[in-house]
Amino acid sequence: MAAGKYVVVQTAPAVRAALGEEFGMKIGTPVTGKMVAALRRLGYKKVFDTDFAADLTIMEEATELLTRIKHDSALPMITSCSPGWVNYAEYYYGDQLSHLSSCKSPHEMMGAILKSYYAEKIGVDPKDIFVVSIMPCSCKKFEKNRPEMENNGLRDVDAVLTTRELGRVIRRSGILFDRLPDEDFDTDLVHDATGAGVIFGVTGGVMEAALRTAYFVLTGKEREGVEFHEVRGFENIREAKFDLAGNKIKVAVTSGMRGAKVLLDQIREGKSPYTFIEIMGCPGGCVNGGGQPYVRDVFLPNEDADIMETYIQKRASALYSEDQRSVLRQSHNNPQIQALYTEFLGKPNSHKAHELLHTTYNPNRKRFD
Ligand code: SF4
Image (cartoon, rainbow, N blue to C red):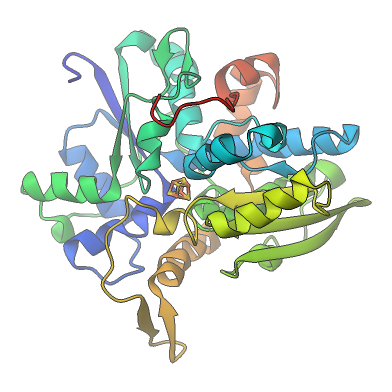
């Protein structure tokens, strides 16, 4: 498949919150270190964290949002990192695609950066780099084949494996997952990630990460209390209002297509009260993606709080606790993202950033093209 290639792998945030279930671990057990160790033993040259590119997505998306607010153009803006949602929008709301952010999803951005900036820095021909993405999402397999997901004739991402598929590969390789030591991602150039990138894996996480950075860009200072609890939770549609340096914005978050339809019908009828909307294709977000381990019991006890909670809440807690443990929790404070802009991209939404990191949508796309 990739003989003679420089084969690297990246893993999405939601994978670490569920991969342990493939090996009999309790739901909600974060297994980041063991996952990295397993991937190294499978022979990947480098093991990268898609969270780096989630931070990059936030830099691009928050800048795009602020530009749209400034020009009062194509509002509300809607997130675009969920291919399940993007497909739905193309099929059923082709007349409303201008509302989608033009940002590619984080793993596609990561592939584009690995085959440009990173390749240049390490002196490898981009044609020789083969990028594998480990995703919670079966739809990412479709997304990687979208014709727009390439630069200079090279696909951004070459292969996608789901969390379940990775579990199978690890088992078949004879690796004893639970006995692996914890290891860290590779540390060169595209390693650093903030807590904002980690929470991408749960509904409301992209919105919260974008608000953390939008607040800083508009006010020039960090918000006291980095967390935006108003956009967390699992109700079908959640809404909140914020005052960002005099800009009053109303936002909405939903996951699953039931809420998406309500929000898109409002936009189509010219009645949407929102400035920014987050939509994820799977109920609960990527922690509940179609490529995640199957679950037998929907409700499980939470011994600490003496309550029952869903497996989605447990997986989400694994990501929120990783965010809380992070030293850096806002995408704009990621030093390697800052270096990427200084040395290569110029600034967010620059011409080069648009070439590599942004995409277009097609209302006439066939289901399987
Ligand atoms: S929400 Fe579902 S469809 Fe969307 S990126 Fe996550 S796993 Fe994929």
